[in-house]
Amino acid sequence: MKRSARRLCGGGALVALLLTGACTTVEQGLAGLTPSGDSSLQTGYAATQRDPVSFEQVQADDPQSVIARSQHPKILAAYGGAYSDPKMERMLATIVGRLAAVTDDPNRAYRITILNSPNINAFALPGGYVYITRGLLALATDSAEVAGVIGHEMGHITANHGILRQQREQAAEIASRVVTDVLHSEPAGEIALARSKLSLAQFSREQELQADELGIKHIARAGYDPYAASRFLQAMQSYQNFRNAFQATNPQLDFLASHPSTPQRIALANALAAKVVPPGGGDTDRDHYLSGIDGMLFGDSAAEGYVRDHHFYHPGLGITFQVPDNFVIDNTAEAVLATGPGDTAIRFDGVALPAESSLVDYVNSGWIGGLDPSSVHEHRIGALEAVSAKAHGGDYAFDVTVIRVGGQVYRFLTAVPSRSAASATAIAEQVANSFRVLSPAEKAALKPLRIRIVTASASDTPATMARRMIGVDRKEAMFRLLNELGPNDGLTAGVRYKIVAE
Image (cartoon, rainbow, N blue to C red):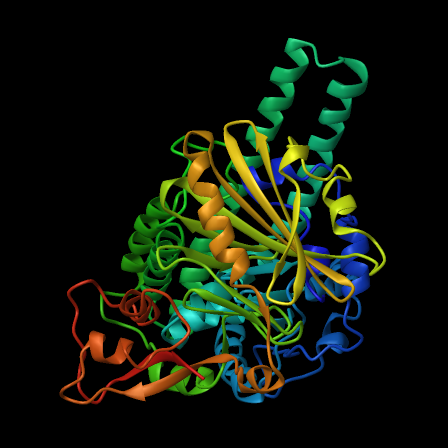
């Protein structure tokens, strides 16, 4: 199971149930997953010449590149490798070329890697290494927004934030060791450590705001619309709210957050843009961008499995199951999670188990905390061997079902608040009983989702466009998010929009 090693840790209340497991360390896991090749885009520009030159040639004498080169394979492994699409790479090269032509550091070259991940993320390492996920590219609507992201990461590199951050983290580590080894966690030592962590977090927030300022000035010089930075910050905030709509949120303010609040960044980005260009100025290059991402993979890849409405399919493993209609599935890096009403949560993952090992013995082996031994019982789901049990932990009641398919055991863990324990069994049985092995024809028919660019007709509305989308939950809301449309915005005939289809 390609992702099973990554799916045996994490998961909130469900994790409290798992006392032991087969998790490897992060370093071991990354080392084992490092791809043998590197298909990332390499682009280097100097301000006085227009032709690309070798990134390695330009950066050969840069000592900062040593740090990034050592981390690059680990980043590729953690984010599913590099995503190769020549059309997209040419589109990004155009954006980077415009930015690099007006940079304050004309001797700096940049290596842009598209990461094969649906997550929305971008970051930079010292020495000119910039990473951007295809998930972020799917959310952006024009070249100016992506230029804002890349310009922000270039700002981190220009200001040497990576090196400064590393130095501050080393100082914080020393402070932590003093508290642990010398002060033995005396109150004065704990206060000193808390202050050092807060200072480190504040330094990081200052870095982010400085990179915002540098990036906005940079994209304006390159001729892009500088207001795109604030638009995309708002788009990312809207997407985060969309993803969290059915999940519990922590109302406590996290003073150790590594980024300033999004509303603060949006307000500052608008103010910075207003200093350089009046509203409506600058190039968005929307059509060129949309043409570049047309056909790009959207969501999970075949190696991770597909979410289709309330179903999960994994063509590689040849399995599927479904959750109730009022649940939302999230295919995370740690496990397949589903959340539903009443703080109900379901976790699905898999482990290897020798065929001669008893499922009853496995359930009783100690990995389930608070297990009720009298509840363990054998049964079958279709033709598959299964064992179910009940457990309690903290304020939650759990139903556990394990199912054997060859040398693999798949695990469903359903958690509900203890006050609702009676409902856990019905939900757990419904989900576990839906588990089955896919036929060869079903596996062959599964196709990944992709971004498709379509032109609106005079009769089209967000609702009609949304009906053309497949494989996503809350279709109209997702269509509006992908195209940065407000709740009351309509479509313009002849304008191109993003949808999700095969």
